[in-house]
Length: 250
Length: 250
Image (cartoon, rainbow over all chains, first blue to last red; front, side):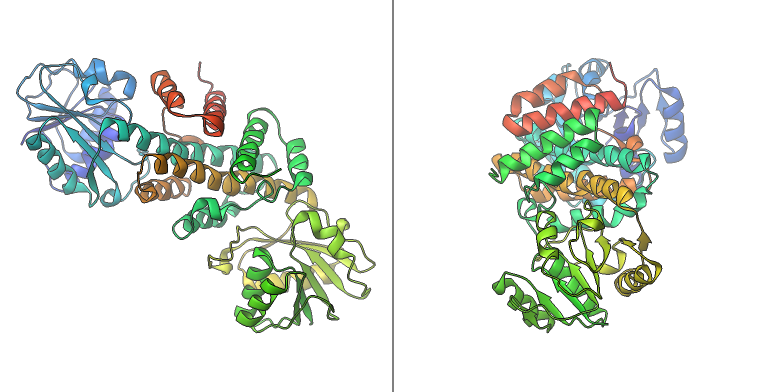
């Protein structure tokens, strides 16, 4: 099985690393960014190229959703399987005469942060049983948690992830902006943040809600609005409104 | 040292439990809700009353911010220290001729969820050095992490906590609403959520941001908006706008 990874960003790097750590050899890592590719190539001992795409049985496209279609066109090989790693695109976005698939790892990847690949849920979609099995086997080398998913379902998985991860991280950024403005170390909040997450392992988040909004404490809500401005104030208002609606507060 | 806790909610319960587990005896737990008080009393072996407030050196008021002022009036004792546990109220909200203080544990408390009290940051404010020392000693029996804080600073600590905890939990609720609607188990998202939090131990959240908004991927942003409605759609729009502003995207 010859496998090529296309891309040099966070997903490409971590997927390549996950394969290598699990003794799945990669034939090449291919992309445009020579500097990033050479770094990955050196760390993981995988050949790289920015020019000549290696012949392979499986290409895994790890580029941003905007670029998947264009990048998929550079694969001229017909007798191969091509998978993208997007949560939101259909496999049909891939533009070539090869067999098409989706290979979606549900995780947030930053190059600077190592992580435990064995827990990452992988969602697989393919055109036929054999390809499905191939991708299942590949993902299972990395993770204990491999499932099938249609494009329709995958869209909602990605959307849920945006709320539960991307927006949560942005709240951390806005929170840190507030604490930084008063020279309060953000480290103070780490036990609170840990507990916020630990709770939802045991309690439905709807039952775990605390804070002034769910107590409908108008005095505190007004006080907080006076301390905020711009986007943080807008976020504050919308989140409180949304909590009010969810708990049917007056 | 005679200590009375006033209140029967999440904070009262957990604070009482933290004291008892750390061998600080409590003279009484006092409040209005007989059912809750008797449960706490039975579990922690503390006398309770809904009618006669016990004489004490220290009263810790653990009721919602809206009720602190009213509740503080029932303490007629003058030669005692009274502390509230609010993040946002000044100690002067306490209405009586006793010495006043603030004793703020920065944590999210749910009765159903046990937690490690030793990591909770406590923020202390008092009128004089002796009272400050008393509260410091009390908090230090529970936690390794006890600090002073003015009311001005505490307001911002509470506000930061609302973003980093209350709003984060609400995002989990909205995320679960989306995954539930498609019968996708919310458990799939737990490794992602764990990693989102693990990241900020190592990377500034601003540098850890991932997702379609920070990639300015308009196609996905539009697709997601089509899948959403009501409050979740409003949250989606504001969060993306806020990300756009923070990263100065076009």
